Image (cartoon, rainbow, N blue to C red; front, side, top):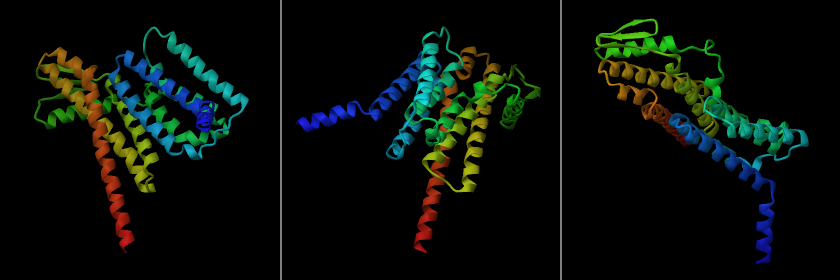
Length: 285
């Protein structure tokens, strides 16, 4: 009994335990803030990405080098401290919530493994960075809005609607809609690219597939968002603003994100099955 108690005490005061406790606390803080912001899209994305990152770190925890120095530990604590102070003093929830995961993760990685050990978490940090990417990119650097307007108008035309497009404006017989930059799809595309990276980290692929997977993910994100814009343009013709708000900024936008993720999941499943069949065939030979 005494031996078991000593083991439990040692675990309680081990660095791994405290790192796990700090990490769990930081994740809980971010998810709580995302929930309070009433941003269902960010909350769903954050739960998905945090879960995948935790799984990846757990899978390799026995091989992690958990040695840090005074300077990287201080910088890590400083990063986390500043982020927590900023979080506590926020009067409105904005782009900072998108950047918070990578700040928390970077600070924790510095505390755990120092500067030299950061490369151990390179893929996970990069995946979390994709959550913040749309908020960090200059709007004029990558503007998908014109392409979104073109593809959405084409979808409406292909399904039998009388549609005209002028720049970012889509005109239907009973109404029109302007495609704003917020509806360009860059956020969903970035989310899908992050998911593609997580998939490649979990299931290593050959060089050709490493190129195909991100392309498929980004394409799915863009097309699904363009379909959402086309649906909103159709709703405008029905003069139903409640439905428009639902699909524009309500839970409807989360439904389309879920559709994109499910389609990408099916593609990944197909890719895994295909690789397994190839491996079986090669073994039989």
